[in-house]
Image (cartoon, rainbow over all chains, first blue to last red; front, top):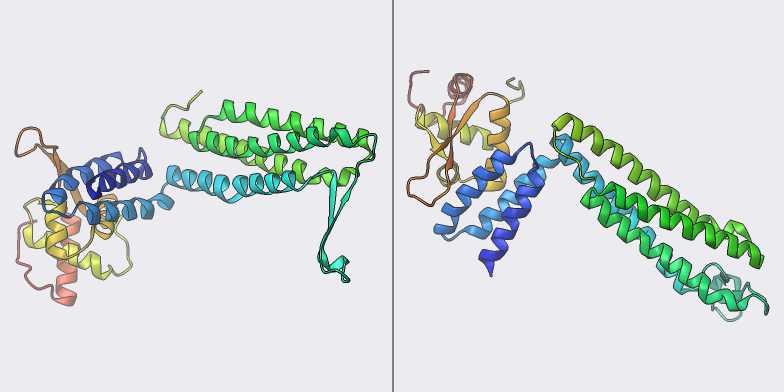
Length: 213
Length: 100
């Protein structure tokens, strides 16, 4: 078990070291065989991973990988979680009032913003918000895969879902300011993907590695 | 380019180990055992020192068929000069004179 884990750590170290340090990754791998013979594969592999992480901020490709993961994990996934949470709570057709507004009961209050004529559209709105939320993790994954064309396609699906949401809510007479949440999420995500795609393009040109289509 | 900052304790240990063996080549795992440095410290140091022109690295064919080729390291002339400077300033134990 520990041998497999050690090999996985070595593979991860090689990925983290990137193209620029490929020779060093091979050098570590060769010494790993010796460390395994001496019964210390896990400690050696863990050290190599630490070494690879320490190297990452020192070169452009490593900084790009850190920025990609930071964007995916620190920005896009929290936005997806927020959208899922909001969608399941009835966003954008349910308005919540915090407990502070209801001092008598100490509980929050949910107000349905749809009337009897438009309440039938509620499941479709929830479905749209959940679809929009589902596009974010997908974009995060494609961003880490550096698959920019598919990321752009998914972002376009997200933009279409946002536009549909805007139109539906406008027809239902829901205040449009509430739609700022998905619009901001989509804008931030699109700008981040665009910036990372351009950065990756420059890296590909400078380092001479092939960018995925 | 050699940095002007004083080398760290770990770098001094590595310089000492490499200078002791100079001009022979050393394997990474042997250096770990000799210096007591962990792989997470040794490899970043070796990479940096190679980038700075202090250490020279090359591949050696495997001792037995089916085994991977291994990387070996030794100090360059600049590395030896730095090791000697450190030896003079601090008195590295075990360091013997060697041709540059």
